[in-house]
Image 1 (cartoon, helix red, strand yellow):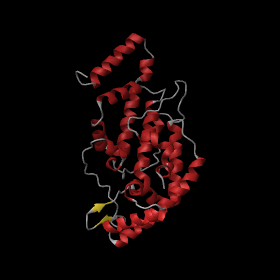
Image 2 (image 1 turned 30 degrees about the vertical axis):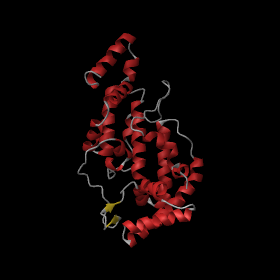
Image 3 (image 1 turned 180 degrees about the vertical axis):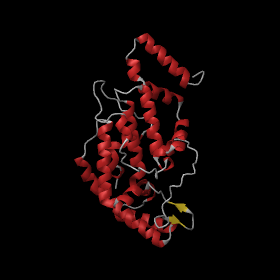
Length: 278
């Protein structure tokens, strides 16, 4: 299967994966979901079982280790007893894609699957490898079916519509694999999509004050990642990214004053968030 089809199930929401992504909307357009509503009714992982370290965010930022325990229960873990290798708890789809794109060998799908089978048997006990191979084959069938299913979905034009798409994707995944296995396969990547969509809703709200947005963003981050991980995430941000975010958060206030006052307020933000000499 080529890389385009490997990623088709999440192609409509991939733009939300970038941590620096903020959705731009016309000034006269109000979100169907308000900033306050963005911190309610989470779709993915309401109990913080999926840690920040399991997500794509951790691959792009230098985050310190935490003491959070996000392992599967003993009957769910699939590990290599010989090498001590533990497979992802909530991001197994990404691991399967890695096998498909980096380790699979052969010209035909059956040859490539067989090469993956041999690899798994080399790192896992035979019973665990067999379970994972069966799941991998179901996953490849899911990807093929998802190509057709995705034609029913349309590219979202707002963060609100992205949340709706994430909900539809989650439902489809759960119907196909069951709730627990869908969470293990896709939970981490889906959580990042939801987190960034909800951040965009808060930041772009046209009717909330900057201070209210700050509080809601903090609540969202702590709700989804936990206080320690959220603080670590904030500590890794580039100062220019922080400044850009503040300008978006306070854009309602900045737009309501005259140009001279606006520039003064921007300069104050630069003094606060940019190190001296930047």
